[in-house]
Image (cartoon, rainbow, N blue to C red; front, side):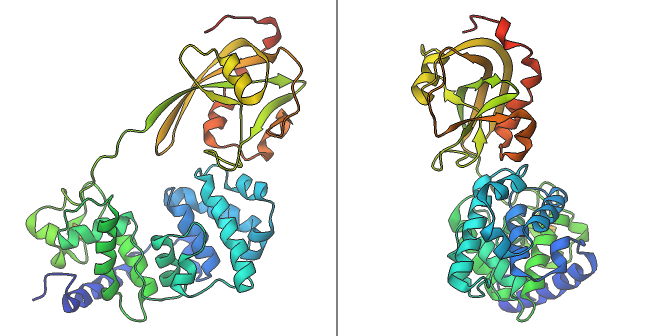
Length: 366
Ligand code: SF4
């Protein structure tokens, strides 16, 4: 009797009940009604950062605005970012458009079927390339996401750290030969679905599992200990000042530089605090603005994967006329919705209602 999924015969045997289970239990999700690589790709990128229930509305909204790859490729980048708003990780939206433009230029707008060609598109890594190749084109390539890592580590009793690339490669090497010929599309989704519905993170539902018989973790009682994930270092704390400047129904926004964090998006003037440097000095050095601080509006924080912005938000007034600037723009407050403003700054904008009359306040607040 084969007990290991890695061994071909056992694996094939495990694949069959897994597929049968998937056919009966799979969720009805919008991207499962299509094999259009463009739509599969959009769903996969969105699913990498957000829960399925949340993705559904964004998926429909995105495809309503950019129904084809050509429409995405030809759209103004600010429109793409605005439609992406709320999903975070804006670099993914920028890469989607870059890749769409590449497909238009290099492949006449037809999504390539070749795995290596897919893998070379901007923003597409091993996982996404495998997902598109298998789900859209039914090719036997593994797509190792968090769910698949967890399922395979438990099935195989693998105790390696799943945040390491070599563990992902090891898991991909296990999955690759067991993908049933002609059923790659279903198999990829079945593994993911098992991880999402049954082999769930904290306490897996082994009693309902179609591959329990083949599971090493279940046999050894390790299903709650696997997979192993080493703790990441805590993100660096970055204390900042954020400046709110308003005039005649307009607010000053910064169009952030391409190469900065949240590049190409719109934000408020922001500087990292430096000991014994007043905010006015730092804002002058960075933006050339001569300002006077008027009022503290509050604080907000935003956690990125590698850093946390702890933002103290103040309203300021111009102490001298504003110099000509390529990055700072007065924007009508009534039209803020049109701008791709990431969540970090949306949190700050929520404090605007506290800014009721900066003119009369002159508070030494540092
Ligand atoms: Fe996961 Fe339990 Fe199934 Fe093993 S038996 S694959 S631990 S749900």
